[in-house]
Image 1 (cartoon, rainbow, N blue to C red):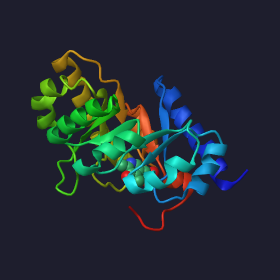
Image 2: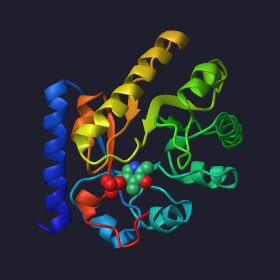
Image 3: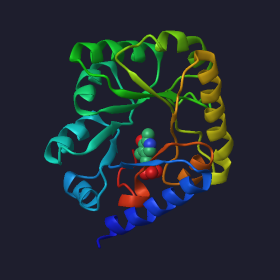
Length: 227
Ligand SMILES: *Cc1c(COP(=O)(O)O)cnc(C)c1O
């Protein structure tokens, strides 16, 4: 077994164990950004079907040369002028980060006859350096978001503020879960999805409600250009 297949087995075991501990199913999204298609193929050969990319151009290079059976998730900063191409390649978008972008994505999805699954990205630490809705934007925007017929709203996504130890991320994950619970009541809707947890903190994220973890470097190794 190559090191990617081995790492995948280990990480799947960790995800499944943490998920079993809280009695929920949790999906593993393997983040393949910066790794070329032949490296991604090793993970495919090891049975992985769900991959995440954060740049459109990388997706345009890899997705067409890998099997059609894969499910591609867009997890990066999304600019308006890329929405159309992102929707034509990726079936799930984790980074809908503002009302304007949600509105526009809904419109483009309608034009393309697509209903992408989407997560609303929450800037839970209200950091200037990050994209995403503030909690209050979501509270006030929810009613309009629920009118977007061409978006299949899964739930919330977050990248919490940088912390020293995984355990320190716990309050941020809990805050996102509580916000989700509040929005469910406010909108009388189900928002089952929570996209949270990365290589360093996915077990804590699962304990706090994550339903899909986005994991790259513990599977492929450290990226040369950290992006
Ligand atoms: C790169 C990236 C990840 C994965 O990060 P790792 O630390 O390599 O697991 C997860 N989510 C987003 C949005 C990313 O850009």
